[in-house]
Image (cartoon, rainbow, N blue to C red; front, side, top):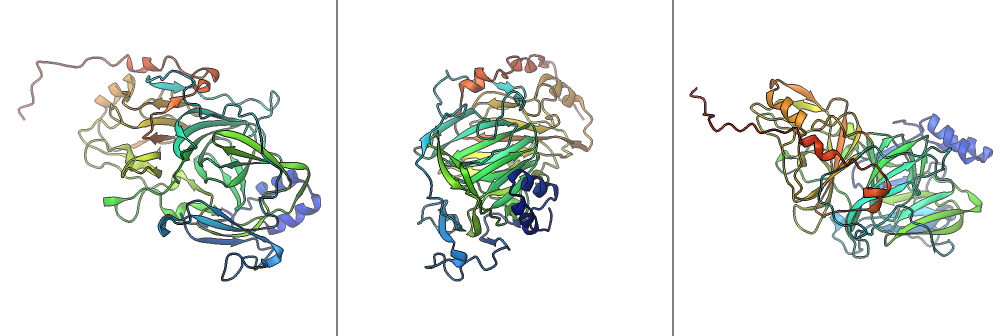
Length: 471
């Protein structure tokens, strides 16, 4: 992370008046700076306009530099202080100055959960295809494909899981999700996320969260693919640590929020703001960049996190601990201890348990589990489960290690060993029973219909004549 600020870069590029040139210089010089902490009360102003933040109040009669004050609320005004989320923007023009919204094509983005008959089988997808830009230019929004989900955006209670595959940047377009939060997991290719709060570079093995209502645009640098977990009605938070104590898992200091950066840019041909509202897409036009926030303060922000910073907890005596010890972020439901969604990772770590079958055990779960792979090979299924693909094990559907994994680990010498070295798998786990979309089951043509065969080699080891050792 660079300690420099993009002030000088902006001054160079403003004379060129080329967004592409500005982007290339910005990325090449690595001019990114962040604020550290999770859910902190932050304040930031672009150093080109010192003193842009009003002192002692939020909405003065006249804001410094002739800016407009605008609040973005992430919670009800009357929420208890620990859960009250809002940020104040000081911007060149307010976001309300736009043409009326009109309906646009949703593409493969949906929350229609009854278009296909329910399927309780174990499902696995091969890596999803990324179209070449020579075939068709696809940006982040047009490249969103809903795989599965449940719930309802109107009642603000639900979840969606999407893939994004794209090959071109969003040019004079931004996205605004009125329905919920996006947790974005790049798998191939880094993405430059420009928000009203500033810029974030997010690479594979990093994640970023764009919370409800925040406008953002995504630049890419070639063929790009990743996963999106969307939750409606709750925000992500750090899981409680309980007996673990004060430290461990994802530490708050490792979450990074961008610093203020603005562009005062008029767009003669029109800037498009795409709004996801009640599961549908709408667009409106305005003649200026929405990223015109000179200063901001608050605790409702976008943020990113590098998965290598996760402090792994593990079993050091016997048995295999539940995957909840690998939870990075959780979006809680109204039922204590039950999540709308958990984001869980399986990072490199040591395996040392004695007298133990060390891989994940066979189980049926009251939660739904969608798994993805960023790189490497997942320990319980080294063949077939590939980076850029996924799997869904619906609630109470049995699953576990494949036949080869079981045989290998039933006889392996139990010495300390590195587990998941060079790999990074993750799981979106939810208390919702998720429906799979037509795109996920048919249109994408990536469903691995032979997935069930990985368990067919499991054979019977039962010996009724076995007796415990007399030692």
